[in-house]
Image (cartoon, rainbow, N blue to C red; front, side):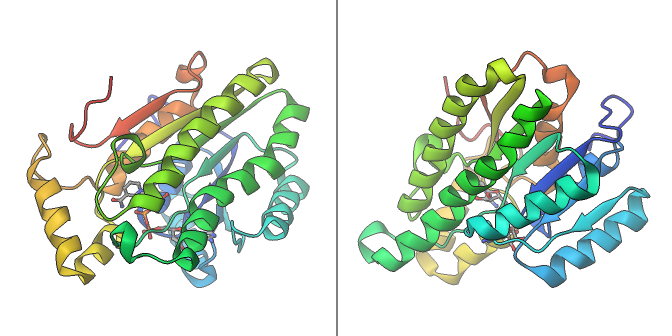
Length: 261
Ligand SMILES: NC(=O)c1ccc[n+]([C@@H]2O[C@H](COP(=O)([O-])OP(=O)(O)OC[C@H]3O[C@@H](n4cnc5c(N)ncnc54)[C@H](O)[C@@H]3O)[C@@H](O)[C@H]2O)c1
């Protein structure tokens, strides 16, 4: 993992949605070890608080949990206002919160589509809507959205989720165009299969487990899923000074599973 000797985010104020566990938790750690002050905006209040305490002790940095439901714009606005009141600025927004369940499209229901779209797509719209005005005011800022290779190449059993992740990519590129003149950069990290709760949930169905096993066998680097700590450095890089001329881009971190042109 990037240790902070080559990247510094010292004193920067970073919001990580879904930072309580999985990839989000690794992102929180990666920013904290480089000196950032990190806000964990997660719906799981207990897990977010526990992660904040553990990572504070591990890194010695300011890490705070602010209970947030990204599907609810009032909740997201309240979190944003709290962060601005407390720190006076927002330097980085990482939209990481997400959810999925394995189901072939014809076995899904409109109620499930709504849940998937609310968390995976509206969640990103809500945070960008409330945070970008502060970044415009500052004339600086950086957004890193976590998509998925499902949104780049499609993935069996993830039709609506893949649609949301594809939408995140198109949305990110558009926001990057609209806010380049405000010195705000917007990029996307697109993980492949990664060893977290979402991936484990696919094994709840026989077909889901078989699909993941087949994908795992096709990963050129090690025939294994990625670890959250292997995704986080890409997010850190895109938020760092070294990426100051990079915006509107999508970076897959997937062990070479897909190689997009
Ligand atoms: N694990 C994978 O294989 C994989 C692959 C590609 C992309 N991703 C993406 O990576 C991101 C992180 O997922 P993960 O694998 O770490 O999953 P995870 O389930 O371990 O973590 C997701 C986090 O999001 C939070 N969350 C869920 N709904 C929320 C809401 N409404 N408001 C606020 N927080 C909410 C959860 O509480 C949890 O802490 C997601 O965007 C996911 O789509 C994961």
